[in-house]
Image (cartoon, rainbow, N blue to C red; front, side, top):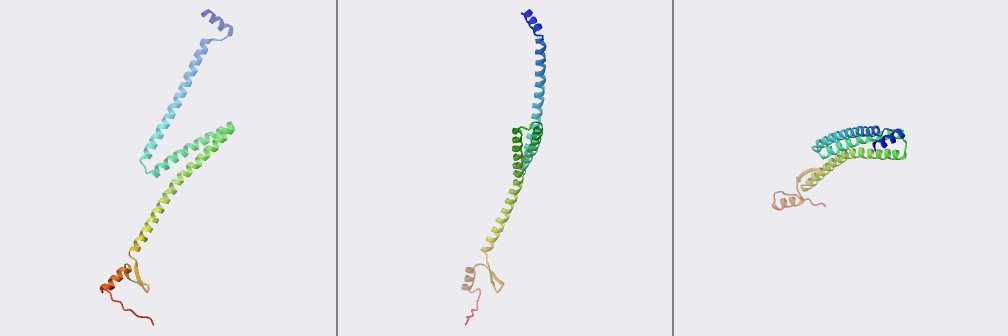
Length: 176
């Protein structure tokens, strides 16, 4: 069988053993490249996990802003890669991907701004509630004034009680 194989190799003008060895070497090189890329991606993911762990200890507002900002940074990088791909290969799928990535970036930036806006809305709502509470508290003890001067603080019932008990005396003038 070995003689047939050698004759076949000679007739075809190929060295099967060399081809097999070359293929094995190429596969090993490709495997090393894939392993290296995998390790690089793994390192990036570990860094992101550490950043996220650190961000979790922050208040929700800051945490969400950090995540959104990280996302925006990644989207910008992907967008630039797709832009370069469009220059090399202006296929419609690349243009579509660029548009979708651009929309994602806009939405992410709006999300960051919305976190700030929501914090402002909450602050304004708290201030409105405080003002309303103060207004309601002031109506519990209304002021009674005569000719622009405060003569007492209380309700009408309080004044009637003081009149009936004789604590205050009122001169009533009848109008003609």
